[in-house]
Length: 164
Image (cartoon, rainbow, N blue to C red; front, top):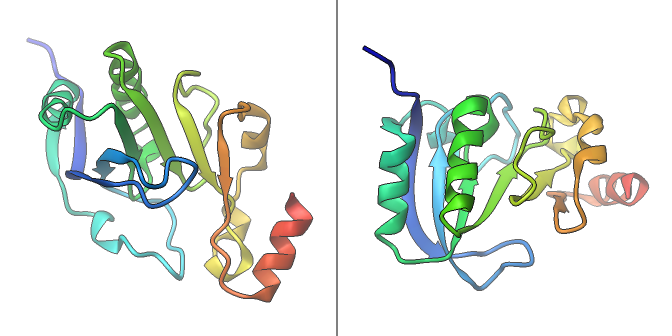
C-alpha cells in the first residue's frame, strides 16, 4: 500500500482577480491552509487552521469544474505545504493552466516551476513580520513575476521605496 500526498485546502472558488497585473480577470483561487506568519493586517486568518484533506488530483478535479484558464494558489501561505504545492502547480501547468502563486516571501521560492508566475510579498514594517522576509528569494524572481507591498502608512511607503 502507498500513501497519497494530501494537501490541506481551505477553499476553492471562482472569482475576479482583484490584485496584480491580472486584476479584472476571472480566476480560480485555491486557498491552502496554514501560515507561518501572523501579519497585523491579515484578512485570511480563517485559513490558518481550517481545511480539508484533498489529493492533488482532487484539487485539479475541482479546478476543472470552473472552466477557467487562470489559477492562483494562495493561502495562508501555500509554501508551508511545499512538496505537495510544487506538485500541484506543475501538474496544473502541464494541463495548460496559467498558474500564479501568492506567497508571503518568508519561505524559499527557488524550486517553483518556472512556468508559474510568482507574486511575492515583501513584508513592510507595519506587518510585524518584516524580519521574516527571505531576501534570498529576490534572486529567484523571473521577469514575469511581481513583488507586492502592503503599505499601511508613510513609513511602509518609504521602506518600500528604499527596497525597490
